[in-house]
Amino acid sequence: MSAPIPDNNTEPGYCSANAIPLTNNQINRILQCSKTGSAPGITIFTEKDLVRKGNRKLFLVDNDVALVEYAGVRKAKFVSKDAERFEAMTEKALEKLEGAEENIKKVVLLAVDGTMCRRNTLPRLHRNSIVVMRCPVSEEEVDTSDDE
Image (cartoon, rainbow, N blue to C red; front, top):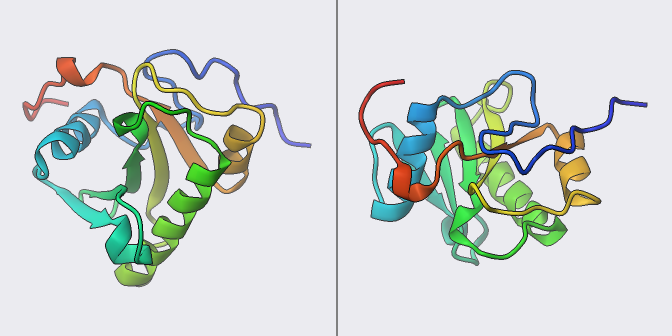
């Protein structure tokens, strides 16, 4: 049996993986892109383009670092249905990226105050090698400078 998933996912900056896949600069650029529609080094895939329905966005960070859904744009708790949609989007995005699956991390990025179902969804994402991170700062505190 695998080790239990830490239950401290309400802390700002929380990450479900030992190795944090995104730098603060990358997180800031994702948040900037979520607000403005563009940021350096961020490519946007829309759910509509990937799976022909929906209005979510998947962010490709620095061409091959990570595929990230910023779940902070919704106020509702991130649940299994959201995980299904995220997995469908990442599967289609990886098909478009041809052969990048081994290198690219899959990340669900929660807002500082975002919530996730810890009974079903967090273990599911963990089982499927999807990293869950919580923003270290709120969107209002985002620094878009180039510093790490």
